[in-house]
Image (cartoon, rainbow, N blue to C red; front, side, top):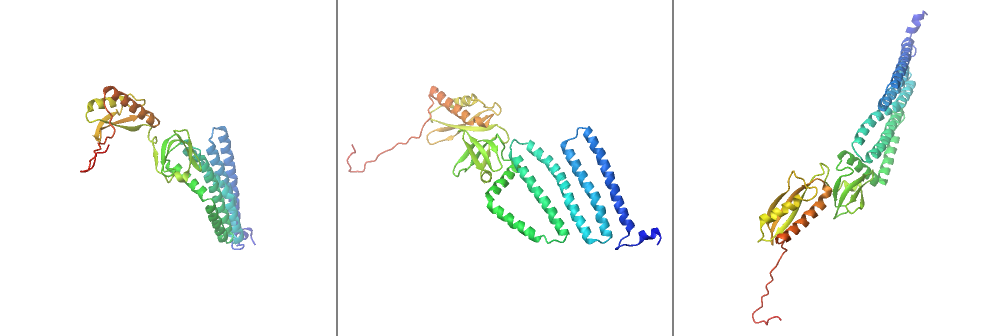
Length: 358
């Protein structure tokens, strides 16, 4: 048989020449890639290259080299109709490519995570992302193993069903922890408050409210330091159920109202001027918008006056309110303006024929 005729003779349904060409081409591609990556790595060492670029480079290099090794072998097995070897090589290729593929995905996600973490001062982002990375890695490698077993003809449904049962059992056992974890993730996405914000959480505990500064946002709970210097620890899943008032989410400016009543025979103009002066002289009061004073309405025992004031920090709300009230009372006393209290006239009617009560 002539030499060229041998390479055209099918062996197990394939031509040896085509298989040899595939293997040679694969080896050539592997060597070229290896040489190219070596040169690129040396150039990266001579330059200041970011850690992210190095991680992406190493992951892409490993992924392409694995592909250069396995794809020609898989093609050769397919040419010779070696079904078992083809499946085995394909399964090995998936398992070998999983690690560099995950490293590439992890490098990209790490970049996104750092951008998110940089925008906040909380540690919850770090903790949540660490847990999510581990879960993602476990899911990634589990899918690779399941896909490889499925290619080899192994029935993977019992494994999937077993994993589902285990997952349900773990979910029931740790439902509170998982609930707090999910709530923590929602806090990251929604960001109703951040560390340093002055907030008020209603109905926590029921029938009351928690007022203070956020000092820590954790994976399980959030800590709020009240104005009494007491730290309240509220589970994240409870916070997500409550009404939250954030006084500093947009800015630290806040508007306060101070109400005072004067007697009906008092000089309203003078009273308004006194209230305005008291409001203007309080610490932290903004000149723009300027304080304003209104005659609000007729009360049962008084004419109601209201001062509307903007202050530069929500944390000064109580101090500013107290200062304004004290100065209004002091100036009213000087000017003889009465702050009336509710009065009732009681008339006793003596029934006819009854004796007077002594």
